[in-house]
Length: 160
Image 1 (tube, rainbow, N blue to C red):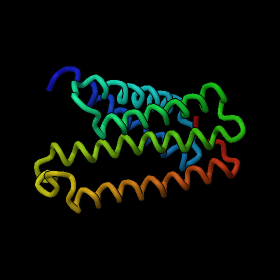
Image 2: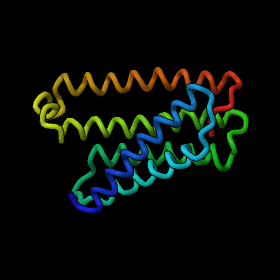
Image 3: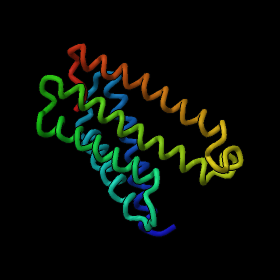
Image 4: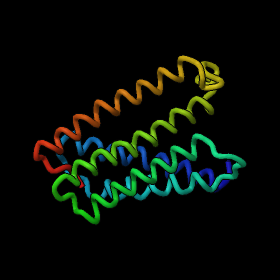
């Protein structure tokens, strides 16, 4: 593994771990200011470094990376420029949960590519085990995100 790849993977895992803490804060009404900053920084850097790998054509990973950067731009705007005023705290929660989902989506892709037992179940990622895993992740994030947004809309200021 190259140094660049190792840095990209480390940033990605740090983004997922810190994002899980941020999501926990959204769900429990706890403020995790530092963790939010770490999550945003590592997730932006994950997406940016993802474009540093050589490629000859546009890949699905580039689309996910671009979408992630758009969502992260909204999150940064809501948090740092609008200071979560009015409806911006809900926008931040939605954007942060979506960015975390994108990171976990890519993690599942990588696990099915790199873990031999998972790769044997879905070598082309067109098989049912891969689809089921991705659907389970999506359902979990939609459910957790809905609860987080509901709490944000109920007047509970989300952790920033």
